[in-house]
Image 1 (cartoon, helix red, strand yellow):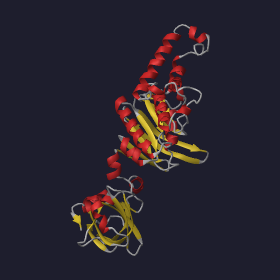
Image 2: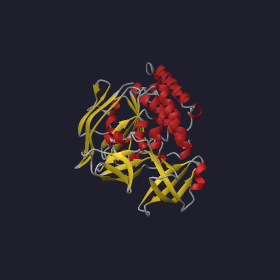
Image 3: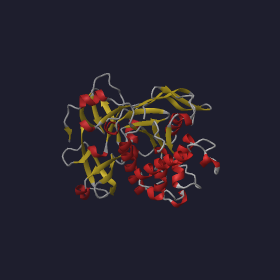
Image 4: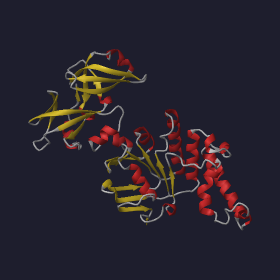
Length: 384
């Protein structure tokens, strides 16, 4: 296994820039997810790391070796594609063995009749069979080795693709949205299996997905990409609780974070005309926005900072999501409530909301985080 380093990588298709100077260091044994909306450049970056695309500029290094100009086959990386890319005419065992046969068996040894008579052929065949069986047992598909891909479920085909990657003993595993073709129940099961496989192998994983749940539950770090750039790369809890950019805050988290306009009167800040007891310096931005996760809001009847009516709610059993229309329906916020509060959230019910200022996030007009203002506001206890 090895660490990977991407330095100032750019990519253009014609006149269209797709990647804009990506720099990313991935430690040996780390699980890093590239997450972002469709078209943000995450799959292109993965293909450049794999050697399937050439960068317009910048470098890619594996360990201490610059592999930017190296062919994909020489990089010792295993890639699992969204479509799994299994050969339909080969058995599961033969599909898993493909990379080993390509790497260890000569052209003469692959010939149907005389190949088996070549020196060392029998030993190589046994060695490959042993590696295939070991990978299949690890992925619990040992009983499927004689089947063809067309006889397998989506989850089983996914495991075969992982097995084919596993037998190569690669420097890193690259996975490009491998769960997108699975149903919801199977995705939950398979992402747990991938996370367990990563822990068992202690291998380097680079995982591309647009699904924030996959990224949050499996990764050591998440790189959030938009518009060909990495906006932030950090541990999942930091990405969620301490985003650098409003776009990161809005992309990560379900339901989406509530963004409300702050009003400034001299050194005081208010929300819909109600003072927040936040005081800012004269050099603070004139236009600011307040970010509140749905769980940061709570119902109150005592001097609420926000008032509104219940416009919609979703009862999920263990929790309730309610959309509260504020200020004559000019804006809505989402509240994450407990089942015990469900009776207070009937459609059309008037409710009051409060929040702890320490759980709020401040952003400027361009969406950049204003931590200095939050620090000044953090001396205030709960706003209620």
